[in-house]
Image 1 (cartoon, protein in one colour):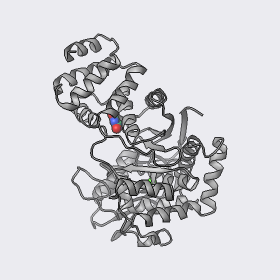
Image 2: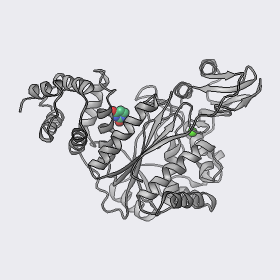
Image 3: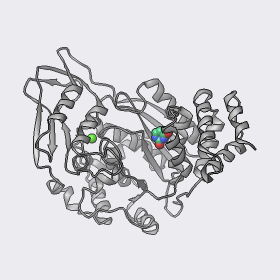
Image 4: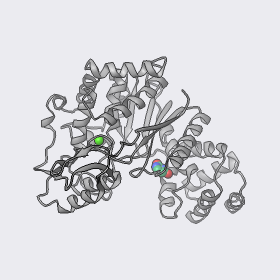
Length: 435
Ligand code: URA
Ligand code: CA
């Protein structure tokens, strides 16, 4: 088999066979096929697309390129959740303890974040003593005992995806539904998921800006999942504005605690109950989505979700007393309010730009090597559709810098006030996949 013939085949719009796709991925992973040939193939895929079969083959070839996590020692159906990247997205922190309280085993492999705020591990590290450097056996034992544990990302999952993603980034080939869908799905499958719930974000703050593109990505991932034997559901949720109120690591931990008590922001609570219901249903802990939702609502009401968070934190060395005393979380030195300059209704809160404002405070990493400040960030006081009076606070800014002019300016530029009434955006747009 010669790579040049396969490039030509895809360039001319033909399908690549299973064997050919494995040849390409194996050759690229071991270095025998060079970047320039793979670049040409990727560009041909951008223009020609891939069939459902090719997408499933590409996903499995990337899974096979590296280590696979074996979760077979964990009892029950392991359902993983993936979000296509939001701003102030606190769902993982809430969903873990919440669905674990309903009996779903949560075996989470997580990473550090790049951009707006930290990843799940960074956020959890704002709890003193909490650590994810546990070994595989301990991880499995914790999930069997408590139904929840988080472990740091292992070094060698889907190396083919790592190489391809880096190459796509510099060859203008990221924007391709088959490539994005197989990239995301390969990582979930290699991490050992039996079933997958996807939260596909749509709107200004999201990777996919339009509902049509988000729907296409959602359906592509659901079909890959179903074609490789993983039941998969995708929820398309709105990211025109940040999710919940808090954007920042310790601030989001506090927000997760509130939400697990049933006292969280309405949108975050609703999204967690929706995603969580699909997880519980796919894990076969409830016979219907409605029954699954009732289980989760009860876990919020009766305190079992909060109790689960305490057990989870303390089992991995964390100080669980922060759950009842969130004031023990890292606190910023200065607190400022961003005052509205006029009366009206909030019309826009550009999610990714507000995320960037949080990053300027130090809540996120501008580059891989940046050090994040766990205490800082933003708490939104208003959301799209809310009425606001001149002088009222739009955002509370938690900062360790005294001078925050740049942050304030960025926020003012990206929070638009209208004199006319504005309707709040729909949170859940649609759901694709098995019911
Ligand atoms: N996220 C991924 O993991 N892969 C892509 O290709 C795009 C977004
Ligand atoms: Ca949030």
